[in-house]
Amino acid sequence: MDAKTSMFPSAYDLKAPKGAEGWQDLYPYYTRFNPARRIEEDGKFWFCNSQHWPTPFKPFDTIMLDFAIKCLGQYNTRHLLIPPANGIDYRILNGYVYFSPVAVAPEDIEARVPIFMERAGHYFMNWDQLLADWKIKVKGAIDELNDINFIALPEKEELEVVTGGVGLDSTNHLFEGYEKSIELCYKIWQYHFEFLNLGYAAYLDFFGFVKEQFPSIPDQAIAKMVQGVDSELFRPDDELKKLAKLSVELGIEDAVNTGDVDAALAAIGAASGGDKWLAQWEGAKDPWFNFTSGNGFYSTDKYWIDHLDIPMGYVRDYIERLKDGDDIMRPTEALLKERDRITAEYRDMMDEDAQEAFDGKLGLARTVFPYVEDHNFYIEHWALGTFWRKMRELSALLSDQGFWPEADGMFYLNRTEVRDVLWDYSQAWAIGTEI
Image (cartoon, rainbow, N blue to C red; front, side, top):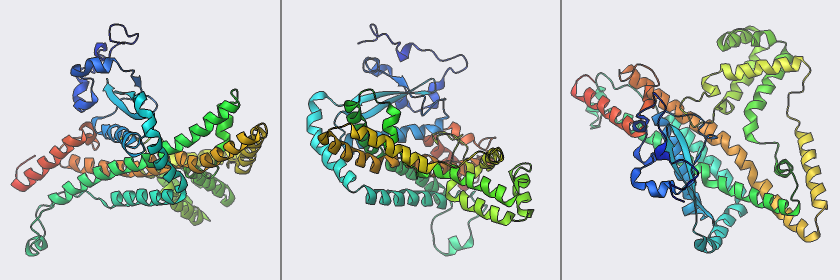
C-alpha cells in the first residue's frame, strides 16, 4: 500500500507543533524519516512506542533507544535466528519513538527453525548455570561503572607524572572514563536481551498451548500458573515494608515522620533503638535502593539511592497502613496456593497426552519466566541507574568548567557531541586558552 492509498498519514505530512520546529536537529540522522527512503518507509506500519518512551527525550537519551533496539535485533536476527522475526526498525518524529517490526521472509522461516531450536535449546537446558553467569557479568559491569570517576583537569600535572616518565596527561583519564561508560552501557543492553526473548518465547509457547486447550480461559489465569513469589524485582518494596514494621515495633514512628529525610534520619538516630533501624536502612540501600520511579530510559528518571525522600515517603505510607490494621506484606503462601489450584484444575480437564505436553511446557515456563521480571531490577534499575549517575557527574563537572549553566546541560547534546566537548575542554586546558 503506497502513501496515496494508505489509510494512515505519512510521517512526511505531519508538521511539528508550534514552538518545536527544527526538532530534527536534536537527534541523529539515522533516527529520522528520510525522503530518500520515503517509498520504503511509507510502505511500513509504524506505531508510537509510548509504553517505553511516553514523552520526548533529550538528545543524549537517544543512547537508550539506539542500544536497546540494536541489541534486541541482534539476538533475534544474528544470535538465535528467531524463525518469524528479525528486529524492529525505529524512527523519531516530533520527539516521539515509532516502531516498525521487521518480519522474516516466509520462504526463509523454515530454514531458521533448526538453527533456533539448537541455540535456544542450549539455553533452556543450561538455564540455571547460564543465568548465574549472567548475574556475574551484569554485576561486573556495574562494578566497572562504579569505579569510573570524572576529575577536573588539574592546574598542573603532579611532579611524579614528569619524573616517572609517564608521557601522558590527565585528559586520558577523562576520555577513557567517558568511552568506558558508553562501552559498558552498550554491553549492559546486550546482556539485557541475552535471555529476555527466550523467556517470552517459552511463556508464549505455554500460553498458546493452553489457549488451544481452553479458548475462553482468561489470560490472567494462564499468567498465574507461572507466577513466582520470590522475584528480586519485589525486594525493594519488601525492604521498605520491613522498615515500616520495624518502625512500629521499635515505637519510633514519630521520628520516621520528622521533616525531610535528613531530619528523619537524625531523629531516628537519636531515638531509642534507632541504631537498629538505621542499620537495616543502610543494609537495604545496597543494592535495593537502586530503583527508579521511572523506567530507566530517561536521564531525568529519579532513583531512590539518589533521592532518599522517595523510599522514606513509602515507609511513612506503610506505617500509616499498619496503624490502620492492614497486612502490608505480600501474601506469598496464598499466591502459591492459588497458583497451584488453578494449575491443577485446568490440568485435570486435559487428556493424558495433553497433560504430558502441558507439564513440559509449564515446567520450562516456570524455569525461565522469572527472568522476565527480575532482569528489570538488574538492568533498568541497578545498571542503568549507575550509568546515569556517572553521566550526571560528568555533566556537573563540565558545568563547573563553564560549558553550560545547569548541572544537567550535557543531556542536551548527543553522545557523539559530548566527545567534542571533552576535546574542547582538553585542548583549551593543554594550550592555556579559555574554553
